[in-house]
Image 1 (cartoon, chains in turn yellow, cyan):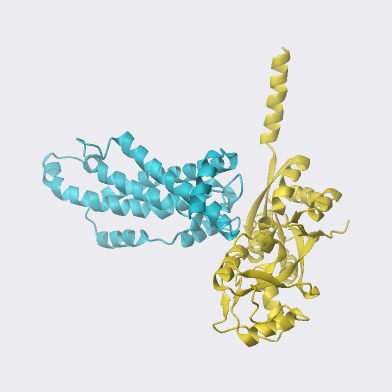
Image 2 (image 1 turned 60 degrees about the horizontal axis):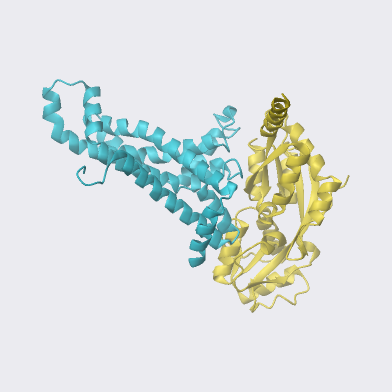
Length: 265
Length: 231
């Protein structure tokens, strides 16, 4: 009898576990490639009994998936595009979660000598002047939008044989840059977790212009009644909790902190 | 390369649950797609071989051209169909194994139909007088041709399997490469390549190739083909 009782309890527990609710979230590649999602997702599953299914894409595609109602929430990093998304009524609101920074990567010999630059603009101008090979994401992602904004700020329209738009994700673009020994703009997390660095090295970082804010946006249920807004709100609550703060701030790779929690509560 | 082989061995014998989940989903999606595509493609190929109708040659030309259908375009097409903002969005099929099966069926059905049409056409030229003189119905003719051409049709089906199991462009778009949900071997390889983990990606690639070889061997063993006395 005792055994049957135990079996029943076990069966109930397993049934509940397999009936965990799930939510689809389109996230930017850096959130996944950095390895942070591997730390956060099991904890979310523990605390909320919620399976967060990640669709790992560039920010441009993530916003589109939200607009089309194919995901319940998005986690992206491109302020202007996010504001446009909200203005069009595709999302309910925008909640800042954490930040890291963009960095300039290039061949360790640094032919354009950007390592000593005062500003990012100056570094980009050196690259353009020396026509050193530069690989761009070219995929309308958050990193790509940032890079193009920086070129615009530097007063340069990048074109010519030295400027290659890879049209792919951060990892593939880093692979291309590694193969061509070219300069490239990356987020710090993807770079630290990248396994094929070759002769590439981190050459320039630290300019406030390279600030990279990640924000969470639930897809608007008024527009798409099927989206799981209640679960998205639960997830937002968790992502802005003290537990998330500790986990995000203590996540390191090679001794370096990758993200800094900055949600306001 | 050598590291890739080592990783592949380590992977298979690590009995990693995640890896088996990925392998199992690859098999489930591909085999489902091949069965459905064969059920459509084989009779379609036979039907095209035994029927004479206006526009027939154009239909066959289109079918042949569709053998080279770009998977990424199929992926986009299926995405637009299954997206919540698309005509079939209400089913909520996007980012599920079902969506991946649909995309693969569209990719390999023309291949199977076209290859089987070519086989059956040759067989039909041979059987034509006999089947006509026996006063068979059209369905009976198609059945007889499919049965007698089974070896070559198996090859056509295996070609479809080969194309489906190695496909990445379409299922990445409609499946989303979601861990524990829609991640298969090919999308996992693309992901690991993106992370610069070439050796691990290569290891997964070798697992995929081994899997394709094992499936083909098993099918030949079950069908007792390619053995002495039965060719």
